[in-house]
Image: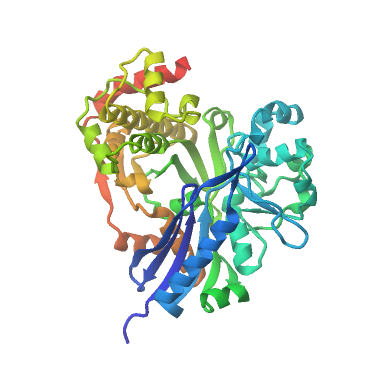
Length: 495
C-alpha cells in the first residue's frame, strides 16, 4: 500500500491579509499550497476603527468550500492563528455585540493618565509580565469602562480573535492561552486571568471563559458549515493561535544558545524558556513574557520591523513604476552604506502617512546625511534594523544571562539575504534563515501532534527540516559595525 496523504488547513489571519494554506503531509514531509488569500482592511465609523470580522469569517467559509472542492475528504484538520490583543464581546445569546476595535483605535489615547491612578505601571508589569502598551487588551477594555460603554454592560463572553473564529466554526467557547497571554489580562505565573487586576480596573471578571492550552481538539465543524463546505470529517484544532507562538514552534532547541526572530511587519526576537522572567531589567528593556505551547514561556523583545519598508514601498508605488521587494533590495545594495541611521521605533514613523519623507525628516533633525533616492532610503532602514537586532540581542542576552551563538530568522523577512548577512555581521553570530512560512507550519505541526500523526514537537522539527531548506550566514565584517552601533545607541540616548 502507498503512503496515505492527508491535508491540513491553516488559516493565518493578519492585519493586512487573510490566508488559507493547505499542508499536504505524506508521513515524511509537508508540502504547502495557498488555497486563497484575501486583503484585510479595517473599517472606519466616525472616529473609530474596527475589524470587519463578519467579512473575515465569510472569507474563511469560502476557503473551506474551495479546499473541499480540491482536496475532498483528505482534509483532516483545521487550525486558526491570528494577531494578538484584539477581541470580540458576545451577548448572553452568543451573538457578537459589535465588530472588534483595532488595537490602533484612538479610544486608548491618553489612557495611562487614568489607568495609573488605579495601579502603577510597574505593578501591572509585575502581575502580567507584559510590556505596558496602550494597544493592549487591558487598556482597550479599560477605555470601555471609562466611557461606561453599554456594549461592555451587555457582554456575557469575551473572546480573542482566533477564539471567536473557532467559536463560529465549532460552537465551543474557550480562550487559547497563547493569544490570551498577549492581552495583559493574565497572571504571568498562574497562567490564568488576573482577577484582582481586572477588578481594580473595573473590568467584569465573569465574562472571561476558561483558558485552554494549545493542542485541544475543539471538534467538528457546526452542521450549517458542514452543509456549506462539505467538510464533514475535518476536526478543528486549537493550535498555538497567536501567530508568533505558532512561528516559534518551528525553531528547534539545540545544544547551543539560540534566539529566534520572527521577522515581518514587526520584529519579535526572543527565546522559548520554561519560566517567566519579570525583573527590573526586563521592565527597563520592555521585554514581554508571552505564552507558548507545551508549557513554554516566550521572553520577547518587540520592535517595528518591515513596517517602515512596507510603508515606503506603498509611497513609492503610487507612481507609474511599481517596485518589487527584489527591486528595493537591488537599489539598497547599490547605494552607499553607513551614511545615516534612524531609530525604527521612533514615534515619527508610527504616525506618518509619508514614510520616505519621515526618514528624511529624522535624518535632518538628527544632523545626518539626508537620503534622497529609493536605494539610499532603503539602505538607511536596512542598516538601522540590523543595529536594532543587535540591541535586542544584547538586551535579551543580559536578561537571559547567556550569550546566544545562533539567531534563527523566520517569517517573510527571512527571505531577505541582504539583511540576513547584515544581521550576522551586526550581531556577531551565525544567522539561520527559514522557514519563511513559520506561522503556517507551526499551525500545521500542532494539528499533526493533536491528531496523533506525529509524536511531538521534536518529530515536528524533523518534518520541517526534511521539507524546507535553511540558509546559513556567518559573520564576515563584524568589526566595521562597532562604530556604527555606537552611533545608533547615541541616537537612541538623545531621544
